[in-house]
Length: 354
Image 1 (cartoon, rainbow, N blue to C red):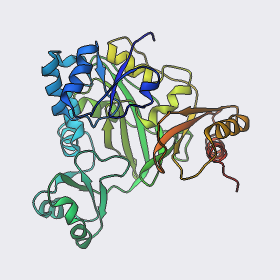
Image 2: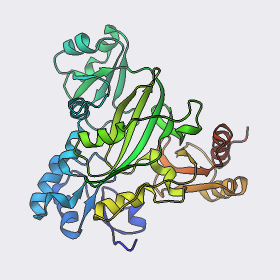
Image 3: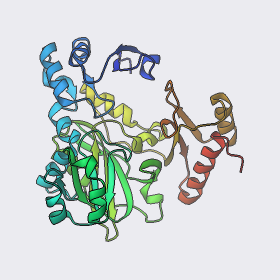
């Protein structure tokens, strides 16, 4: 798009630094963040864990207006605190699991949530990190060393039929929702995504819930909205991410504007459009203790499946369970068959010999 980019990261060798200028520094260092604000026309986020307080301080140090950042810092502050996020959704009438703070010895959680309940760290948790389950009062007590110091919440456990996700793009005046996808999680990490209408339960009616969720937090920009569909067909918002999201990676190969196109356009205040493209399935590639060299794995995949698209992130270190890349598979509408082909593609890439 002809845009010069600058990134901030604690590491000196990052995927972003391989293709554009970079500043090395902590993501909570207001001085380093202020350097980014001073050198850039517009600023956006790769994740939601940069402290809102540090960003506010950086805006003051740099003298830049708050609209320099997309999404806004107040929206970020709401989303960063999972309890405030739940409260904002509830205040806007957006259905989501009921949540209460765990800061009174657990009395409110026992009375208002009951068992089973989900325990979550209010700040910083993702991919199942910072999440525990308490099916009984005894299990709640077992986890007390984690939550009794504060910073945790308890929320109702939702037995769901499937998990859904939608990317939402909005400039405050106009909002578009991209494809509704079904996500399958393994050990709390997104494993595969595919168009919900190709899944066993068919098309999902999210009834405008993703847009309502983004409006509830005053969102401007691109948002990933993850939802539960209950056994009786209700849709509840699980959480929001104010950035490109794992569940939107399919858009890189669907032939229309990708989630990243939307993200950049919204950050720069450019026009954007409703996107719709080919059916694409996505499988995450997690770090492994052992596996073939990348060049061997890449060749094996591309020779096995011409419709596979490999996206490798270029992270400096591979760790078991770390997201290292993903595979997109363009399919012709055969959901079950395509999902099996996608999984086979991943097995080939990872050197499976069964």
